[in-house]
Length: 81
Image 1 (tube, rainbow, N blue to C red):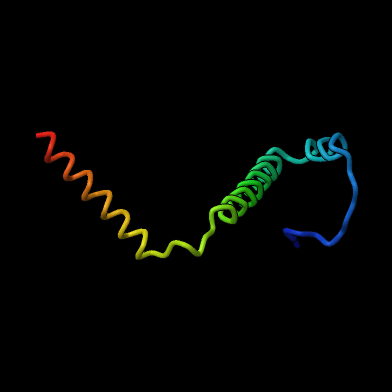
Image 2: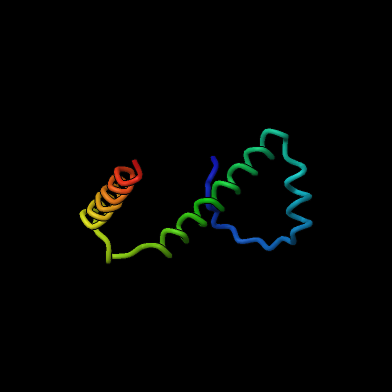
C-alpha cells in the first residue's frame, strides 16, 4: 500500500534524505524526481493563479477587449496598404 501523504512526521537532514533516495532502485529514483517536480510545479501554478485571480474581469469583458484589439489591428493593416 502506498500513500501520497504519509501521516508519519520524521525529521531528516538533506544529506540523510539524499542518502536514502540514492538507495532506491533507478526507476524509483526517476519516479521520485518526477513526483517532486510535479508537486513543485503544482504549487508554483497555484501561487501564480492566486496572484492573478481577480473578480474585476469577466469573460464578456475579455471577449470585448479582444475584439477591440482585433478591430484596431485590422484597421491599421488597411491603412498601411
